[in-house]
Length: 304
Image 1 (cartoon, rainbow, N blue to C red):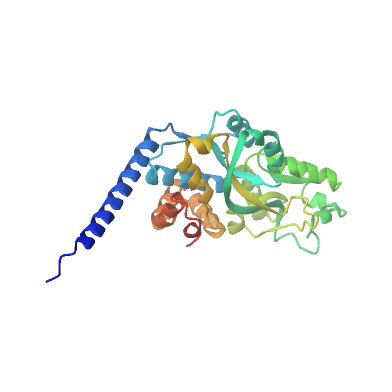
Image 2 (spheres, rainbow, N blue to C red; image 1 turned 60 degrees about the vertical axis):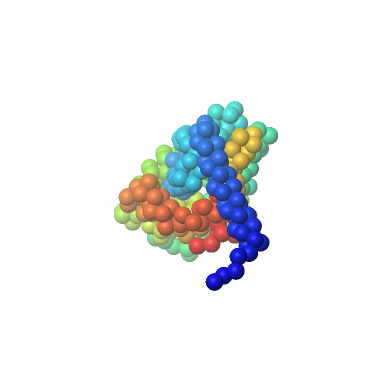
């Protein structure tokens, strides 16, 4: 027989009280989140952004019971809407280079919530273009090279950050004989695909992480002067006052991260099925890791 201990009883009572308080707190926070207006998350139809945004949507609705509204528009419109308070956040701001102009213009009205993953932008070519002929940006000015690319730089939307930066690089490097042919991400890659099937050269405004580097044999052109800014970090940025209104959501985005290899793999799988399907499967397999992010655990958030 175990002897009765009043101290043990007190300890049991204390633990029970803590457990009850914890449950009550989480219940209160869930109700509080549900009572909040939907978090309006802006996004651009880029493959990496679609995965990052839709995954965050699932986490917020499941873990915090926080309603979410997704708003799609071009990046310039997103920044303006966020600065005006018409959307709450965009988890796709490339800094320090690609979106510098937008950040500089609106930063007084914004909050930087944190870095989600790292990336790179630049001009890329498929491996049918010999490195002996085109290895660097400077090689684009070699005699006869522009003609082999039909004088085209394939790019996505007119006026986005990379489009503007490429215009600057062309002017600063005095690259002549080329024009940017803008459409959309899917339009740009469809033309790349057609050119590859015909054995034609392509010059592409590329960025990574992106499934294009998993599907096509692409390489970036050397950029020793870092005209395209070198490594980029993709930030979650919110309107001023967002963290005060939605502290738990802000905490999640401060710890939200996706390993680059996982992100690129998810993008390619989404192309073969749907973003919603691959996001649901990835979340189910990594639910504990995302719970850690919601709870502000930076270490656990990066553990596979």
